[in-house]
Length: 409
Image 1 (cartoon, rainbow, N blue to C red):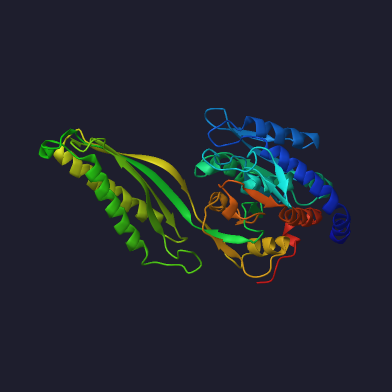
Image 2 (cartoon, rainbow, N blue to C red):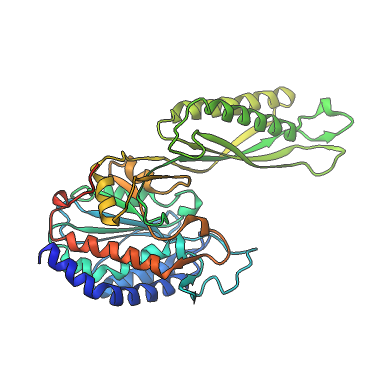
């Protein structure tokens, strides 16, 4: 069946059939408490069963502990370049938030569906899963790969094996769409991120005898100032496509000490660096390491047993797909986006796919400003628009991806 016929069929069937399926799937997905600190076994089993009910097998990639799994499922001929639809199954916690309805039960009010993960990013997963029958019917020339990770909310910690598996497919994909919420705008770039925890161990003592001690809080405070100075240096290089237009250094927490008359022997500092594309990250890491070594040496000069321990929190690369690349223009055509591709202030797993050599963009329903908050929601109209994009993808699967139309530069 040619693309025109498939599009006509989709126009008749998709709005009613796919919306019913999408909303039902989303309600089920929201019902799983897939907060990152928990196993994602229940939601994985549900997705695997849904795919299996349509005859689609799933390849599961477990973490080292064996309590979390990524999913890779392929539809169509594996020996040809295809399209990856990527998302994460985990969500952030809800404790301490004032929800007006149960966060793990989908609630529809005024054209909006509320629930944890509705926007970030179970809405996208639901539209993908609802489109599986259409993908199966059409994927004779171009395959679809569904790639679902875990622990994205912990700094993209669960995507490495999944990205490697996608990159190792018999034919490398021509396009990866990471469905984070962008309002279905195509984003071709975002910053990278490095986050660390520094644990300062000094020597305690009485505050009347500070020369016999090594103050861990003072050492951590000096480090905070040094990091702020580094952040100011990074502003010398800028990229107007981002807000802020430079790489940034942020000290998020500093804790230590217990009583005023005691010299604190322990302090903990957490910081992050968000880098614009093109930043010399190796040189930046070297500068960070040098600051740590300087702080360690100063503490040890006061107390040989003192130390500064470095604990990684998260790290992922930025995304810098060219706005005029075929992948970007192809995605713009699929999303029917008007205007130029955008950049993002937040990070995603897209940078990992791009680093693996897979042309990648970010494009999904919803708005990131609603994510991680109480009463997170996605609009039914937003789900319908994402479903229409899935229908456009399905309508082209009978044609090799290299022949798909793309938006003009």
